[in-house]
Amino acid sequence: EIMLTQSPGTLSLSPGERATLSCRASQSVTSTYVSWYQQKPGQAPRLLIYGASSRATGIPDRFSGTGSGTDFTLTVSRLEPEDFAIYYCQQYVPSLRMFAFGQGTKLEI
Amino acid sequence: QVQLVESGGGVVQPGRSLRLSCTASGFTFRSYAMHWVRQAPGKGLEWVAVIWYDGSNKYYADSVKGRFTISRDNSKNTLYLQMNSLRAEDTALYYCASGGDSEGFEMWGQGTMVTVSS
Image (tube, rainbow over all chains, first blue to last red; front, side):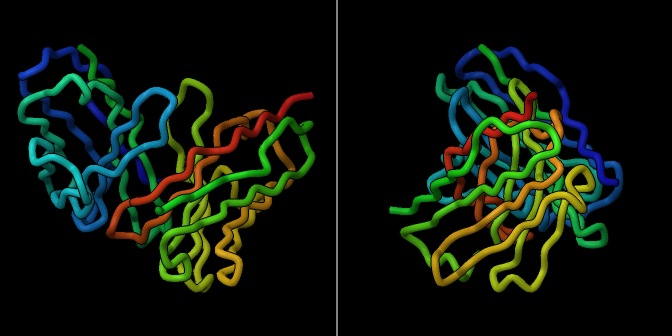
C-alpha cells in the first residue's frame, strides 16, 4: 500500500506571504507521476501541477512544484485571496497499479 | 466546452447495487484514461478506479476491489461505475475525472452523491 502524508494539516498565512506545502510518500516514486490539486468548498478539485513540476493549463506562475524520491513540495510564492483552499498531492504507483491522494493541507487566512 | 456530467447517485440500502454514469463532451473521450474519485462528507479525496482509454486496463482501490466495476462505452462518450454490495462507508460524492498516469487528473465533473443507509 502506498501512503502519502501531507504537512502541515493546516497552514495559516496572510495574502502576499509564501506558502510551502509538503507531501511525503511511504516509498520512492517517479516524479513523473506526482500531481497537486486545489479544492475550494463546494467545487471539484482543480489540477495545478503534474509531473511534479509542470503547471497545468491556466495555472498562474506563482504556483510551483518541486521534489523527487519521497519528498515533494508545492509552493505558492505570493498568496492571493483566492488561493485559500485545500490542497492535495496525488501519485501513481505502477508497481501497485494504484493511484493515491494525500489527506490534504488546508491553507487558511 | 469541455464537460463531464455524472449521474445515477441516490440513497440505497446496504448490500444493494447502484450504477453511476459520466457523460463527456467537448473533448475526444476515447483518447483519455478515465477515473472515479470519491469524497466522503467533510473528508479528503479517495481514488476509486481507473480505466485506460481503450478499456484494456482497469485498476481499483483495495477498498472497492471485487465490489465495483469500471467500464466505458467510447461510442457513447460515457464512463460507468457499477457498485455492488454497497456499504455505509461507500457514502460519498463520486467524481469522474480524466487523465493518464503522468498528466494528472485534468478534467473533473461536479460529482454525484451516493448515500448508503438503511
